[in-house]
Length: 582
View 1 (spheres, one colour):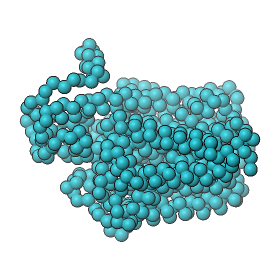
View 2 (tube, helix red, strand yellow; view 1 turned 90 degrees about the vertical axis):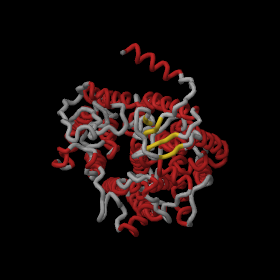
View 3 (cartoon, helix red, strand yellow; view 1 turned 90 degrees about the horizontal axis):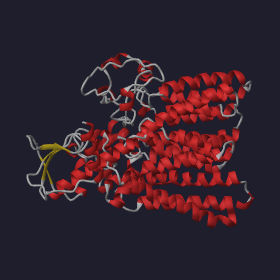
View 4 (cartoon, helix red, strand yellow; view 1 turned 120 degrees about the vertical axis):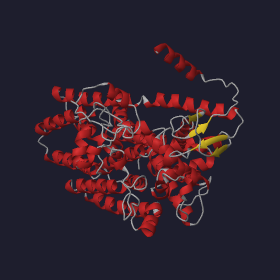
């Protein structure tokens, strides 16, 4: 076995970045498994699950480093362990700086994290309607692949916002895994490696949900991780690649109900690719590894909800499916979509302006056709928003996809390599099959992996120096880069909303009064009051002295006597700007 000093620089860097991602993803898989074992033994989450999962992830890294680097393992592991722990701590710190003001985050994801982090065992107990009447089915029956690690963090910190750190950790894992692969093939400059990794990782769905409790961004990250690990396995059969693939499967099938069909399709596509390229060793390894991971993911880590839902409600995907299934999506899409199939809805959204569609104001809004690459105020206003419905990947995505198809045709005609063509059909076909397996593929956050389609084509054309192909590839990259820039605007917006919410809590606390509060969809808002030591009393509130919790449907009665509270500098500056504008 080669030592560290004998390995090429690109391989050492590739392994270094890989091991960071390896530890972070394994951390979530181990935390899920430990959490499920805890529930199965009749206990609840406490302060030990997350740190033990981290220790296990680092231990697995150490064992792998011992194999790869032998006598230099200690120093290599020391650096690797420090980086992994630093990413975890920095992620927790950054997550705590922001309030989650998203709809799903406030309505049921945060509620799930809170209940799991306190005394709830979802295997032995079903929460009553009184906990969260409007969203209780989602809290009780949805997968907890994101919420269990988040609740394990909450159990340590006792601060609900810290749980969002899992998004940041997976984001980091995804980025380092991409860098690892690019160093493994070593065809690009450092800047190009960083640029390509950033384009793949900064999926607008992931960016929009980065500091919220939404889980679609994590699904986007894991879909990309699956793709990259599959590429590693395709190149070389190594057990630790299969170990990471298994961890990705275990976490993905527990994030959302759609995680199971996505994984089945992805694994099938990988097996077909390996079989057609006569890579029989990898083929056998992937079958065995994926089957074992699937069993662990669904039966052990996913005992709740899959086994519990099947036993109690006769369907693993209850309440989305089963005898008493609920129509969730029908409440939030235009009336006209009821008469369209999945392809009709998809192409309507694909060729439309990026729009939030406020269905609660207009049940059947007009969705005008948009010429690709055109832009208007609707696009600019909605592109930075979380969970945007129509054309949710950004205003230039449709154009990027069309240009990538032209690029694919040019490369297809130029290259006579039959195997390359077959591989591209399998890879892109698998991706599209996963997208259209979802009936609501028109909504970007339900199919975040679609972001990869034009990027895979552009990346596959990187070997070409033909001017026309370079220009088309550049258009794809620039178009997607502009969409990323627009999506990143949600971060300063979150900074502003966090400042508003924090100031609101400071003002209410300064009153030293019991706050009369009425909660509907967002009952988890009460946690914010608990953490600020603000006493509350739930009751109906009405009248001229009623206000709302920032970016929420929760209402409260403003106390009569509030002493002056210093407004944050950011809010003062924004107020001054608003006055000048108006």
